[in-house]
Length: 339
Image (cartoon, rainbow, N blue to C red):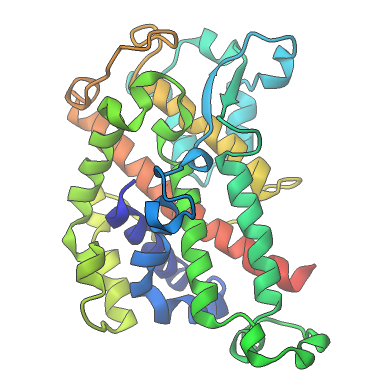
């Protein structure tokens, strides 16, 4: 997803938390810095935010899945019933995969196969990145300054011995929440979870999908426009809500649930990335676009020739990216006071 889309998702997640009256103190922390989501939510994709300065280094934004033929196949099989149970029915992708109509169907044999994420380096993938950043943020928030301290239940008695400039500021905390939203949103992008050549950014489909969403979201969320002058946070959130109609999404009954029992955010997003891979295989069916063909392309206009199908994919990707961000933020925030 590009800068506009990542920015809008982060800001819309703040608005969703506010609208659903979830974690009011977290909203108090994030809302004043909503404009700065255009920076924080985009940091992970910035080449000049990497010390090496070479390439975009986005290995940890992906978990590229493909058929697995090794000796532990049972370990890497997730049938449809199990996947749906572990997604939770509050997510749009659950409804889409469960619908199993002509727009949302996979060959039954697809679900019987083993699939494994292929990554350039061990440990460099989306669920790991979401987990590691979430753990780090809990520590940073425990060390929060006096304003953050007042927003979180309980007391950290040793914090009185820390100099003020050693404690996490509200703006820094908000920036890390926005960074976390980037990786959560990327898990909703099917091309980030598909190891076929057609899903690489420069192969066409990936880039074309992102440009399509960016055009719908519009220039209000372009970094230079959003940071041009101060905008009241209430207005920033309202502008974000106005985009809902463009995607035909309705968050009025959204349920920002806790993680499923026995889940942590690593496991939650391993399952979600598997669902995104399933979506990628519905968009570009493997019997037409094989896993082994390194030259095949799946042009945007070809795979989305059905306008209704495109609208359905837009809706579920965008809805879940916002909802998942709110769920993960809530989880991280609550872990501080409940551990």
